[in-house]
Length: 311
Image (cartoon, rainbow, N blue to C red; front, side, top):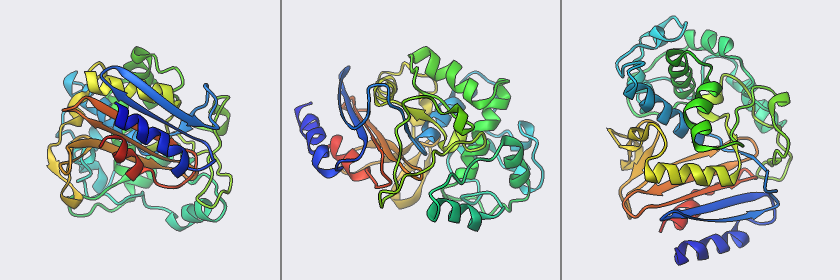
């Protein structure tokens, strides 16, 4: 663990003076480093939320609540081309769905890029209406936030619970991840929320919303994220079959249910994330039993730093 600890120490120089938190997990030991993040502080994890959703999907398959070849319309009230998309293709980003649903994508981008506002405040009802108007392209590897929004809500529907309640009942509750929550509105954001900043240091509005929850709406503390990484390594969390790569992805990588696996120089299973004011990375080396997570309170990538923690 000494090499990983040294890399953690180097983060203090590379990440700067804004808020950030990082942890390395190895053989049951957890080492953390934080800057300007209180012990109770929670941060946006962005698309690492998809990693949680992948676990919930695999868990639902194991519990026979749904089948991989189920069509989306069997679990959600959608019409049009999206209704016939199989869940399995959503889970591996092979559905042919675009990154975002049909609608005013330009207006969303302007709210985010120009005003540093939340572009994802939609309700589930609004998401389903947008998805029903969305064209579906040719199946193949293409990253889709929309796909994972729909997958997560389909899994929740099959389970008979709203997404955030399912997340608590199957993962957060059993593992004691008390800080982990999914705010649908600003009023739902708990105390001790770390404020994220854009790449240029501007204060970013928190990204909240019911629709976006399964694809990018989770907040958590670094301690709870480290406990989750430990559970991924020791198999004490549900749905770990999601980690196993089952299809080809972009750049010579492989993919399971959300989780991406690189083969070189080491076999690392990982996901990253980004919101208006945060960037994040989580990765595990399953063969060596090492994991790492970084939550950065500024919109600057930590992918390379995360991979270095696993070197």
